[in-house]
Structures are given as structure tokens and as C-alpha cells.
Image 1: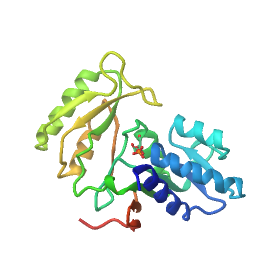
Image 2: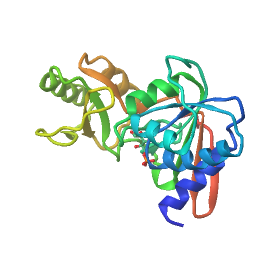
Image 3: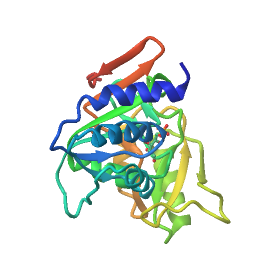
Length: 233
Ligand SMILES: O=C[C@H](O)[C@H](O)[C@H](O)COP(=O)(O)O
């Protein structure tokens, strides 16, 4: 089975967690999009949910497929969010933001009673960091913020390169109007310390480490779909 088919299998399995009447956070990315297609079929068959999208891209797809939407302003407390991830560790720590939606994804996930992450098995790692960590930053003071990120990394024994997503001349801009610095630190032994230190930098709006957010991972491999709860580490 190829990666696209596996993403669909994970999405299909997670869809069984969605019940009529739910207020549902809807993730961003190719796996979340597989989920949205399946969700739209259920909605067409009569499933009654209200969705809160985590990006403009997700909102556009939901609208196109007839999934009813609300906003966090109208619907600030959600039952469940289902979203993909770029990496998943055994404690269900995640790296997210490969598609640039990390800020809204984190806000929506944290407004939800439960967050379920769906993925193919290639996203599972022993330690986070193989995937460059997306860090959403304010445009103002970009250079100072980059220096501060480098200082933080050094203090935690991490090294690597920071690159502005999209390049210096035409940077990628998030739905919130910010920029993204992708940090290739390699293996991150203490993701909690990194998370705290990055949050202390004034120019950092948010980062892609989602720790203690997901309560269940639904992972598809060629051997079938498995469900994982966080392993205490
Ligand atoms: O910003 C994007 C999100 O965090 C995605 O959920 C993440 O990048 C995974 O995307 P995909 O399902 O396409 O691998």
C-alpha cells in the first residue's frame, strides 16, 4: 500500500471516533485531507457535526465538500480534533507545521477535549527531530529572533541550521501573517526544555512541538491500523 492509501486507512479508522452532535477540530495537511473526504461522505449520509478548521486551506476543502463549519469565536470549546503530524514519538509528542498551520492547529487542539493524531507509519520516530522543527515567528525583529533561537539551541546542546521557509526574498506567510523558521536541530533529547525556551523568546509566536496534546495515535502500516496511547517516558 502506498503512503496515500495508508493515510486514508488511518483517517477511516479515526472517523469511528466521530459521533453525531460533535464539535470537531479539523486538521491540515494531506492526511487531514484524506480524513475530510471521508468525513464529507458521512455528512452527506446524515452525520451531524460542526467543524472548526485549522487553516484556510482546510476551510476551503470543507466548504467545497459540504462539511458544515464554524469558528472558534462561535464555538470555542470542541469535543475532538483530528489532525496529522510530521513526527510522532512514543509519548505521542509531535512535530507539526510542515504545512505551515501549526499555530491554528495548536489553538484548535488545545480547545478540544481530545486530540487524535492520524498518520502512516513513516511518521513514527523514537526521538523527535529528524523533521525540521517549524517555528512561527513575527516579522518584526526577525534577525534578533533568529539569534535568540540559536542561543537557545546552543544552551541545550543542539546545533543545526535555521532556514526561513520560502527563502529570504519571498518567504512563506502563515494564515496569521507570520513567517516560519525551520530549525534542523536533528535529534531533540529534551523537547520539553526546548519548548519552554522557545516560548520565552518574544519574537516566537508558536513552535511545532505538540507535547501532551494528542491522547491517541491512529497509525496505518501495510500490516493494518494500530492505535497507540502515550507511553510514559
Ligand atoms: O502544518 C501542517 C500540519 O501540521 C500537518 O498536519 C503536518 O505537516 C502533516 O502533514 P501531512 O499529513 O501532509 O504529512
